[in-house]
Length: 218
Ligand code: BG6
Ligand code: MG
Image (cartoon, rainbow, N blue to C red; front, side, top):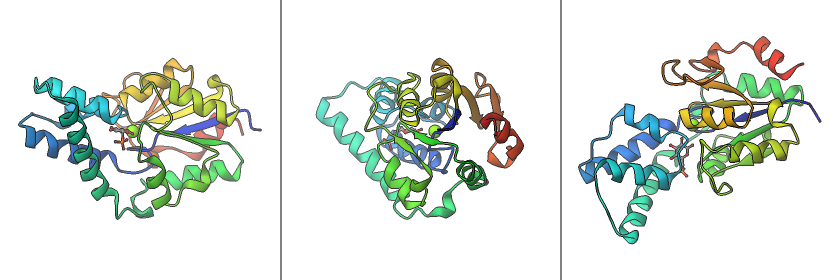
């Protein structure tokens, strides 16, 4: 097995679903009369569905019954599912295949490390399942990012030491999780937001294969 392992977050890294999560939350927030901006949405990235709703209700100072809570949770997800229903490979973010193909050609093990319970169906829709040795998603983790659990499970399944794993993340919580796991953290997004990341790129078009080669020690 290769010494290095690569772990990818899904939403906002591999596919452009972060915008759909935002739209679905915005829809619910509007309905509940709670202000929800794109800046606030940064705090939802990488965070479990349940925790997002808790945060939203906290902002609105709303205390609700468990059944009301569950019904809003379901409503948000149904809304989100409508957005992803028709997803195809065209929604894979630019130059992501360039990096995935390069690593696959060199037999570098890859894992998915996502907080989403919808990760598998999304990967299936966009045809990326075969790239991953391990898929760790929101159905398997008990402690959400910024806890490093999701990435530690992925490293274990790849049989790669945490310090030899490289994580790609668009969320502040995800970068913190990678750092806490002792992994190399690569932020995808804005430098001003992903201040804790070891490297930051706007998107994969900015990433040279030579850089990947160096990280993978090829
Ligand atoms: C993460 C997203 O990948 O998954 C979060 O960044 C989202 O915004 C979380 O809340 C949970 O996703 P899902 O699909 O289980 O609601
Ligand atoms: Mg993400």
